[in-house]
Length: 585
Image (tube, rainbow, N blue to C red; front, side, top):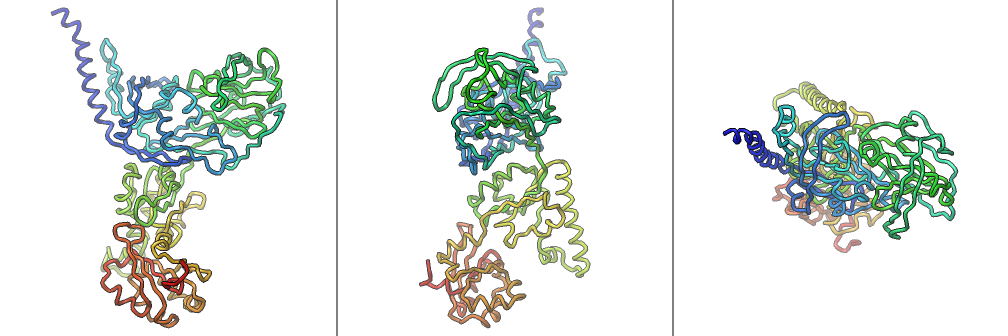
């Protein structure tokens, strides 16, 4: 009996461990996250998808830099490197082809983000940075104290970024919703030079004091061995370098200490590499990153006076010869209202840029049909409201019959202001909002009513494919064969009869948005300036593959040919001689 009592704590702990195993894996759920930015193939994946990759087991001690404890876990996950390799790199608008200056921004659903460097993901062992989809607590053999139990039994939000190489767990982010590859120096030029000469470098950017350094002798020195293995040339040797830890120089300059700070080192010829705050200040290897001025006890003789060395990288591609500048850059989120076009219908028409901006957002404004159709891209983010009843006054009147004109204006204004305040509250909390709408936002878009309420610098518009673009492909005619095409709506025609007259006389194609309901009312005006034989084409449900179709007719016969069509809203109307069967194709 006495022996049995001795094992009771162990048995109870084992029982709890089994319960936690099932509980934590159930908690993983099927959350969705995206990988966007400078990649060829943006991905939307779920935690369930992660289990289909080759996985690794990584233990993490959740102890942050301030000493806070949140449990010890064995996690199962996929190396972030593997996921990014599936996406493929697409570094656009850059005069520097190597990826060593790229940042990887990881965001969760609470608006928190951290920044990794490309190098620490690709030039270290893959298991050091993983995306976990399950976790099992590591239980103490001698029982669980109440203080530990709170953290060991807690719910974990997956997927979870696990940075196993860090001494502290501050960058191990739970509930990841987006991973974005960012090019900080798009368009920067790299020019190959003969002999690299640079007698000094400066440390600048988000610092309290700019440093111009010609000599390192006044700083604390360290000597480290470093192997040189390049992706291109392979092993080139091993040398002992002497210099100053980069963390010492950053401390002297008063660099901004934040998980969203990065350090961009640039050579005199434009070669550059990026280092994250975390790999310098949260990793035990951070103090081994040095700016060297001596090799084998002698001053550097070639490739400049100063050399940035990262001795623990598996490849030496982040070394910067002839160091000219180190910039301290903040990648903190600056709250934005993104107005994003999602295309005219099918989800495969959404652009990679739209997906990237969606990944940056924390809350959404969108119609019910967009939230349903694009659910796999939205990641379960909060939807603040459906704007459809606030865009057009006639829809508000239909939803609220019996009101006088004055009452409609007053109530609609109040409803809009209440909705706008919801957006402002999210922005005030330092988070981003996406306003999603069909087609291209600035071609008869539905976001006009909100633009007047926010400063221009708060808004970023993300273009997309319009129903006009898709309709052109369906029509299979060169609608600009006469030199111009006019995009308009029924009101534009009624209010500017001269425009209609000019288009008819010159033969320019007229493309009418939102005209199906008013086509019969427009006929007297159209007949006034166009011949009965003028070609007219109507495209229905452009971009919705199962229901898109077109009707070719003439002005004389169009009403009889379209009377039986049920769709009265989603349609593009084209009028003009370019639409003729023998027109330019």
